[in-house]
Image 1 (cartoon, one colour):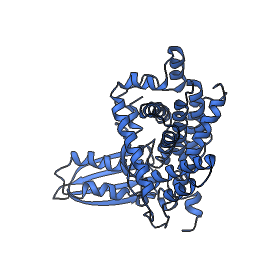
Image 2: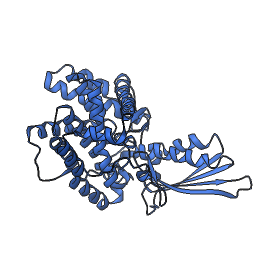
Image 3: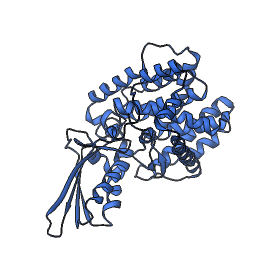
Length: 400
């Protein structure tokens, strides 16, 4: 299992698989084709179906057009067998002869892979790749999940997570300050600042929940506008973790050092899902994005409140289990409806999962690893129209 740095990628929205991944792929192709005078890029499947709303073409053109003329070809009905998010890059010389071609797939969280190259298997850092084994190690040694992260990643991981936490906090602040209409044509107004103001007018319980909503909306709206965020584990679910952690820091005065340990624990759980299933909405639906984000945030909250390894695992298990089957059907292919609200609800659900698990002794029948496998199977069984193609569900039936 590779570094949790692959779960927490700092970049710009609105989509890790449809924006970050294709942009990274374009840079890699450009590096080996500096002499080309023309590029053609073919987008397949989900990338083509919702690419305009996710600004996939804009991300690719930003890299390639300063060097050479670039054409984009859209093939939304063609699904390549390796993954729904396929991209074919082609380069040509002044005689219009093909110099190079490369098929690559954006498999979620900004990660790239194809039949011969897979960033999921590059630079293996963790020997264990199931929570069952890691939890057993924790209980045997007396260590916590975050200590396993430090043992495998080295002390330098804390500098990286400090940067991640700084970007997350800045995204909350930026989102709370901003107002206006989100881009894309749906006419959705930013709500984060309004929710914050209204939340402050209530008593402690409702105020607390309202502030969580506001923080999640703030980051998700920043993502929708192409602002800087951190994948956790994706752009589409980037509001959940910051909302929970920012709320707990503000309301409980947790030190940053403890927040970083919670980030490490959460990253470990997200990494297990990414390794054994998927965090790609185009592959398994929104359960792999918002569901995993909820599990990560639940684990982080449990860590902060002093949960045992068993209680932390239970919190994460609930966060993912109760998102099983969640479809990815973004209206107009934008990371707005239902994505933004889902981040707010998942943040609240993560806190509920933490509370529920900490009332227990951590013992339960369904393990986190079992839920991960069920999520993978469920994702395989979902029709493609519910996996980030905007051909079914809300995307098909909502008037806009």
